[in-house]
Length: 318
Image 1: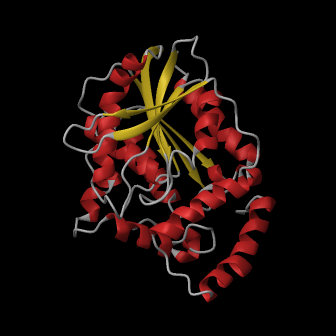
Image 2: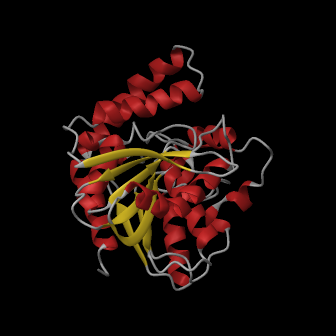
């Protein structure tokens, strides 16, 4: 029988029965401002541990040519060592989230996985809608090593990339776009409760399963996607799970949450990668909803399990 972790169940009960009704009764109308504030507040309120110390933090920009010059922040846990490099794409529905909001997660990711983390401030809707974020992540992928060389940041020449939620969607889109490149330096990718189907067709997204009552709801997803796709784009064609995948895709770790509306598309993506011969690992966190990585106070063991899984996956071959 499915069961939420008691601390998370208590939070969701209060949220669904008190917080959300009061918000709606106040005349709340979603927009970019309050959605960004909500994710920032959730992360701040439910991640209260002292920030994980990181030895070196650098800010810079990766040249986008004729496109957007992407700001990045580099988290280096040990500048005296030549460590592998990770590009991490934050979540937020393509509209919210930032490197600042994700600071606790980025620090933990660097220290707990033993990577130099490069975190881009990619374009957000509605100001810069689809496909601008995908263009930005390609810019960062191709520009990360040159930037590190310019800044004199020592690394061991290997690279991975990953992200959570919408950051998982960007991870999958990047993997699709670079799958035919020569990339001997690439150690793999990881996706944490990713959104991969912009048509919202998988069963777990429905209200009677995970689409209502578990923080991220089907109505929220529809609203986010409507802000992201504003020019009548074909959402099926834009969905990474329906795109071309070959055995040249990066080895992958897919992590889902049992009570997340995106669970089934994450599992289907892992299955499809496995079927075409890509080395793939799949982990479902059985007692959690979407966004739990931003709520570490309510999910300490589960967050540590995710960091450990990413560490072990990325260090498996070296």
